[in-house]
Image (tube, rainbow, N blue to C red; front, top):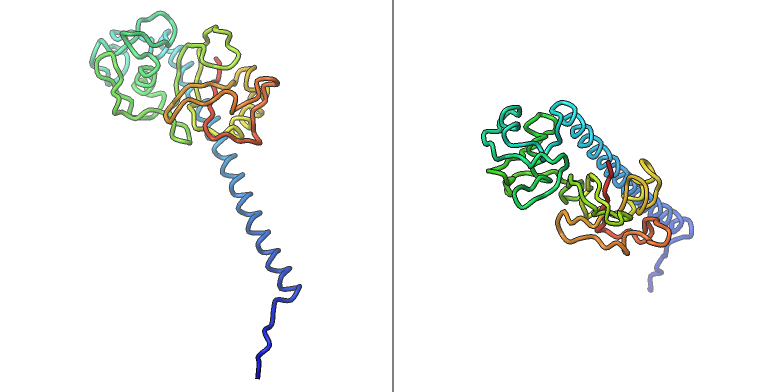
Length: 227
């Protein structure tokens, strides 16, 4: 006697589809929450570094990284070498004599304004030391330069987010703290390479209107917060 096979009823299929929909919705919502948390983390990280920079400037009447080695040894705990300092020209800028953009982290940590293991040997930071990284693993940078969209070659003090940040995250940050455009305001696209390859300007935002390419969501983007 041949057995009859029983398929799913419409109700059972509907239940399965509802469950799948709920699972997909939960996954997408979870991803959205993770992205928002990373955006908030990056904003908080930048705010903390800016606050540390201005506190250092107010306390020592100089800027971290550019602070002379003799003054750093005299006033900052744990600095034992007079050569661990910049050229005192008033800006954080790399020179053949010193990597001031990296010494900035050394001075800030030895002034107890940020946490971390930022060390230096002579006038150069230790390349094996820990450096500030964004939530995606790329290094941040504090430097006076023109490496940001719309600079027209005019240098400004900037805090780079580091690259490897999705365009959607940068768009969210820009909307929260600035004008929402990558080539204007105080938060702009930057091609700074904090590890893994420099971001592509055309892939991260539309130069015609300045809007971040959130829909494409290029994974390797970066920005600079202007002081």
